[in-house]
Length: 607
Image 1 (cartoon, rainbow, N blue to C red):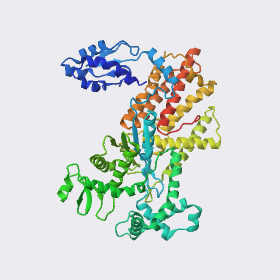
Image 2: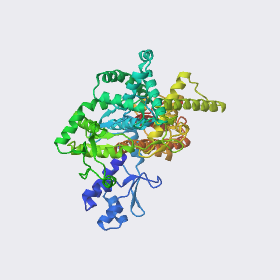
Image 3: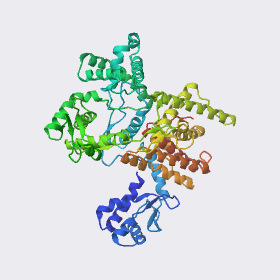
Image 4: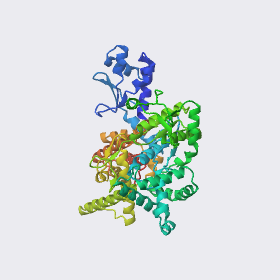
């Protein structure tokens, strides 16, 4: 029950009858949007200006003609024309009342399946598995998970694939550390902890050898030894391959707790090692088809212009080619990504592949997608769903502490601890003012703190336009006011408390909803916001933009607050009005819970 879709369907025949070019009707329909000013109406049709230009007529006259051509309906009050041709649209209260009753019995709250179901492969998270997840992995993981949830909610088939880094230099670090610095007893007792210790120890040794440069230049003896172990692994050295296989279960175990805590479930975890046997075939096939060429001993795919830049001047002004085999015979990330695309296309036959990866990789994916199409992987939508960086208060990329990236588990621990502090402080303050306080057990307080803390980190990230950078501020994230997870979770808990206080069973409102009356302006505004959930979900799916759901939640929360201020629920004037308002409250709680669930955020019954 998408209100915007219904309105556009209502206008479509009128526009088709007037437009000289029917191909432009979809664009004209796109000019029907929610009203910027609620005083003017619920929606506004701004298509008369563009149509007037096409017809060579004055927009106000075109607007009047459009209104006259609208078919009879039970959706709208009589539309009004204002200014240079704006058509103001207000929904009938009777329609709103019926629509609320309909979504009350719908488990999906009015969100209909997509008109055409598609199959999506979403590449998300993608950490290097030989070390703990750090904050740099947060955005890919939770944005990707939100998109999986949103698209599935709309009825699409979605395959989440965690493209693990399980074949690179990080394993050379572990191999070197294991061979030279391991504690056998510690490894036997807890291989996860011992591998983590070895990884950190070797990186510190590399930093000391390089003068605090952990990456290690060509002359860094520690990193040179690690790279040598990596090369032996890639050359299928029996000892290193056997050790790699023995490390992998422990490395995967390092990831499990953080994914569980984030409530992120990924369908597949096919790492770089899975595609390694395919890479030589990728290069051979591209050479055979004339797509790739030899250049200075390397195998490359020319850029979009068919050029392999050679001179410094060409290299400055031309996009680079895609190197798929280096001069030393080593393959590249481009080779692996092409093998991955081919495998995904043949195995899952998707309509779209989404890569939830940071903005700095834009050129890489532009190149990979272009080469995949040249290779014959066609008929698939390729999207780099890029995102900006998380910044600290100094506007630098957040996460460095004493030279290492802040671990994600540490960040979530801090968020939960701060949430618990705020819970205790808020409870004490309310108790001091004589409010009736629910005395939670210690275990329940910990659960509330966990849900609120993890939710705070997720919501703060997902509420940003994913393409922009944002400043990380844990205190603001866990605030109980403003557009935060805690505020939305509190809004949900407040709804549930009304039913507990009134001793009301919400079940009847979901199976046999009462008649709805909307005598107060705040009731009507809240009803309209409740019915706009499908618009928010569909827009978030169309633009791969979870922040459109958080923006919707913020508008809903504000409308709910105004409703509480102006409308008594349990002490309503009549039983009928009380039942109607309880239905609104129940729908608010259900919509908040559902919208947060699409973002991978949980709720609690009491706060």
